[in-house]
Image 1: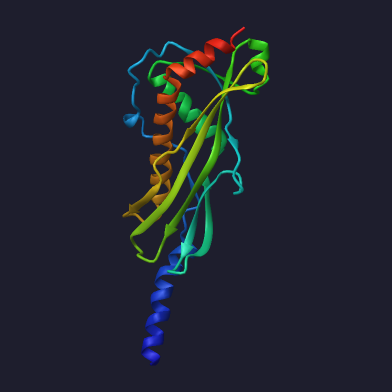
Image 2: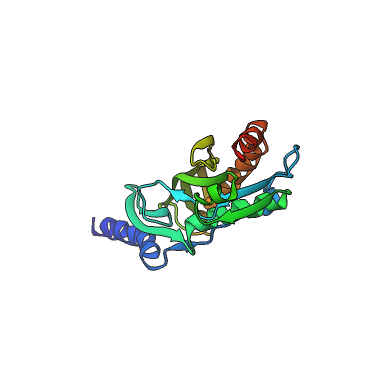
Length: 214
């Protein structure tokens, strides 16, 4: 009996110790540029984008995930971005849009639309959460999702176009255990950015842009 108890304790320690002593706590905000899809339509538009996304989540600012411990999924430490999540999401979108031919201008405030006489697009973070399942250590399984939305604001301050983006949430294995957070966020943000490019390349978006200009 003592041997069994000792084995259980040692097994639990084997899983928990790396979580408590070597947990990944930050990740960069990246996308896979090689996976960015160029739209079939023309990309000659100039797009003004608010330089920081709006985060509507209840999580802490910049939080993208949380460790869990054991089969009971006891909450562990949180994982955040190395730099500003709000700025990073917009910077990656801007880089992707430029790479496919769009002219992108980052602005600091939506009210700049009135001064420019041009609409301004902003990104909103609706959902972004990931959990690391640790009971298969050293293999990690990271599960989560990222949902963004795009909003086009006219120079008069009214919303004239909106598009929901759904990413591709799910489970992703990580052979390096802790690297699952970075892998999932990068993959999910890449999917959201591709969906954003498709939406921005639509006829509906072009019509909204044209109708909003002075």
